[in-house]
Image: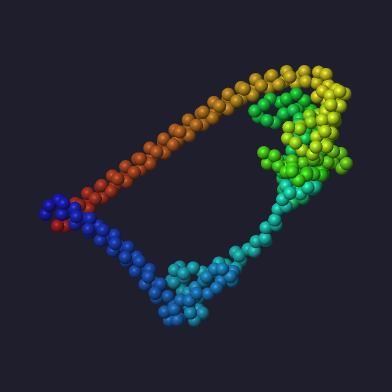
Length: 303
């Protein structure tokens, strides 16, 4: 008998054995299911107490036997069915023209974080003012920025504020609510400009009358040399800004080096994983070859 014919016989015998084993497992399971409730009218379904699931029992009402139960799903235990309360819809504070909230954090001189009555947290950008930068990672701390943040904390931090808006004012490009902020009768936006802690920010138009008022407040603060308009107010800050720039540059360089090292480690890990997969596939291939050879030798001896 030629080698080719022997190989074909070997493949046929292996396939036959595999199919036979699978068929026996399937038929034994089917036979077990077929015999369930044979003396009780067969197997019937019923509605579970949760109103959604389906359970199985014998048609005369008796429960399934221990042998049959694994083949049919049962109803979930009543104790595990927990009624979940309907979710309470969140209020969309972006559409309200007037609302109250508690200030939980002052981000900087012109931005605060508030919590509404339903525990919704939002950042609020005060309309019409701009203060020196203190939190932008791309920039050093600017002149009088810390003083502006401290003044905002003094005015609003931990207090209940009233937030107002007009129809064309909602959110900025960073998703922050744009609002006029009041603590009682104190108009915080205007107060920051009046005391020289903020500029009148009219790059993006808002209420025409208020824009004119804010410009006038800034002019008066400059003429009276208040806050950031005071002579020498930024001399120390300028020195700090130069040192801050140097520090930021050094830290940025360190961050770049750390990122490069992390990328290198990640690349090495991927390469190692690829090699492990290749080794596993090679091992499986060798095992199949050995099993095929062993089967062929057994077949040859039997013949």
